[in-house]
Image 1 (cartoon, helix red, strand yellow):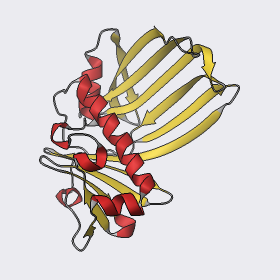
Image 2 (cartoon, helix red, strand yellow; image 1 turned 90 degrees about the vertical axis):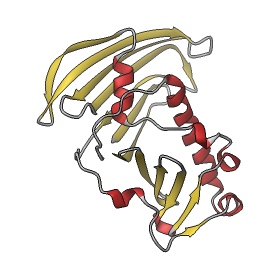
Image 3 (tube, helix red, strand yellow; image 1 turned 45 degrees about the vertical axis):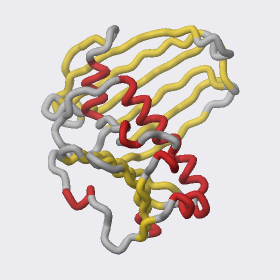
Image 4 (cartoon, one colour; image 1 turned 60 degrees about the vertical axis):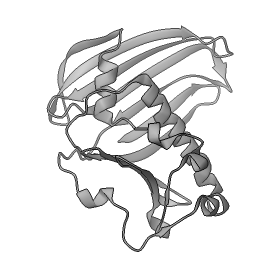
Length: 225
């Protein structure tokens, strides 16, 4: 899944990030490549959660001590589950069907506005979601937002998340700890990779917010980039 973000206003900016997402039964896998760390993998298994650093041949089990979150109560949503949840929300409309990258897709539209009670003022947004008819996965998400005020020179922007290289079979080996990798203790993680600890806390906060939003039925086991 390739995410492109563009901010408008006095301080315009643009950035892009690529995440690889996969699911095999109850196991889930998310990976991103970071400049200082290399490929970072978050492995969400039925009973435990891990972070794997392939460039260093190291891994660590994620615990409450490390993340500040009760890991036994955390399960991350797959893209298919998230789309199923969003499509049921009030204000989301099915607006038709289109072919996207050669795949039949259902198009949804969601709009909304909120008064933030901050310098951003009132924020209005519109989002289009293209959902693959075969797998239930999001092929493309386009979000647009505009505020009456601004935050640090930013008054609006848009984000596009596109699924590429969609496959409907998963490799079970991708959901296991590689042989020969060293397991780090929480102390070693904090000492050697301080930035990683902060990143993990951010990941846990995001997953916790997904969990709080509510779970949805699982989609077909599908790795995607």
